[in-house]
Length: 448
Picture 1 (cartoon, helix red, strand yellow):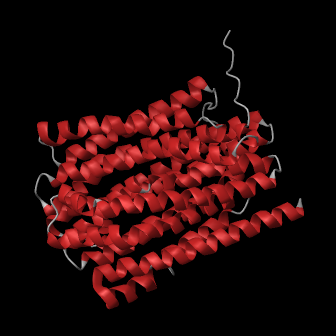
Picture 2 (cartoon, rainbow, N blue to C red):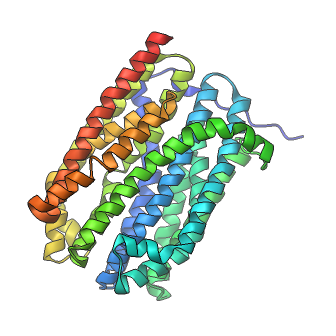
Picture 3 (cartoon, rainbow, N blue to C red):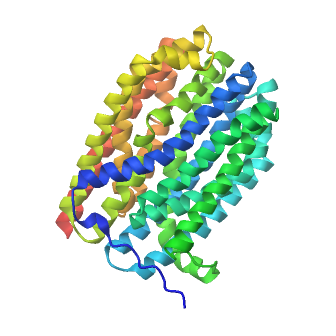
């Protein structure tokens, strides 16, 4: 007779909030930053081929990969929120049902996205500004990588459900193991087998499959938290899942939308500037992966305490999360400034590319403290029943905080002006989202 694993307690209802924030964020970031470090390693290995068309292609293709990641994080946020909220209120059976339904919901969403990308790959890349050899290289990369899109989505669904349970260690292992697999396979496929950019894509696809296998092991074997597919269950849970997932997906898609627009604008400056943008785009998630993970890390802490009606601890989670974001960003920005030249040299950058990378490290990196405020606020909105607020602020940042600022910045100072202006737009929306999050907690506390 098989004995079902006992569900872990709602562990965030007591103890130091800052300690929970630090542990959840660091364990989450280790796995997430490992994935982003692999993207940076991909760029490093491919830059050694000495072909700017390939490095530019990675920038164009990266927009599509990041959109899939954003979709997956959006559905994963629903998993973390619903699992954490039901665990906090003591309803373990319902938490299991939501973990199962969100997994299959994620599978369907990612499959649809992947199919659309395969069908319309050429016009999508051309719209982003890709042309010539860079276009063909980007198409080759995406065509090999797309099977991994679905695997990565399912892996992240498992990871977020594990976070909702408070099992940060297993959630971290999912992405960490995938990153290690890619780092091992990358140089073998790219150089030893001579597959070039397609080798990098194949390594990533295999690693995504590894991540999905580990995620299913953690939820199915260890926690007994995912069952078989049942259409009736998915229909039953669709409304509460959609209430969080759809706004969260829209929220997450705001960033790749802004990135796509920036790529479109930057493409007019030529491959040197696109290469600089690609380096910065790969560097930012590695340097600020901890900031990226804040929303998924602080979310379960807020969700469990909201489920238990501990509003003082909800407010403290907001304060500690934002405090953590500011301290980390200041330290990381100082490190980037000190090593700005070696970073550019690592990717064999020319003078123009190096100047842009240095400009980012000197003036722009510090603005990520305010992006961290936005991510913590998103965690509050998603777990306090107002996921639409996340959508408003993220799309506000991606549109009003990006497009007009970018246009003014380009006219004022070219590529550097655009980077500075859009950073100011992000700071304004980060501050506004933080103020709104604290107001929401106060309002919910007053209403009981």
